[in-house]
Length: 182
Image (cartoon, rainbow, N blue to C red; front, side, top):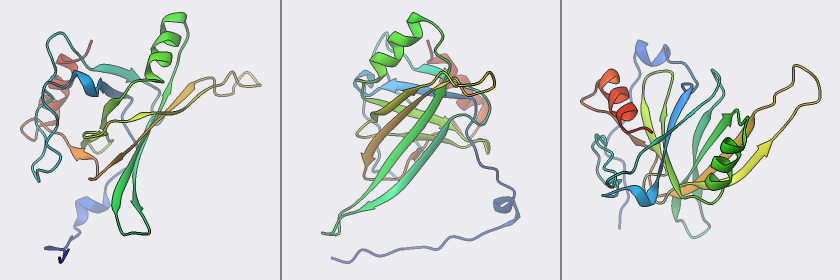
């Protein structure tokens, strides 16, 4: 069996003008609420999120530059390769209802749609889902200290995060995500 590359990757001026970071809002969905699983084996961009009837995405909003998302190669001694997906959400939980949402998130299997500050959209945990690996609620010590709660969602996938776009248009993509959000 030969595993080979079939193309290279170039660079142009627009590649050099990219910024890091994630937008203030991310969308979280329950894996079990998907009517049809994402086709992660396709080389095409995912353009729909098919949810079961009466199911929805949930928006988690934080301050600018608060959320982050990464994927890292994981390679075993036997040569198996996977990608560890990790999304860190920094949220303000300020009431009992927010506490309950975080407690439910601690046991849920979810996928997360992230918008980068370059207007790229990625689905983390598209096939196997993400689960909470840490939830840290802090009060801070001084008046100006961080008092947000950080939720770390982690999962193992066989692909990099999948790209998501509706007709290649940022506004259509945002409209679709927001229309599917409670």
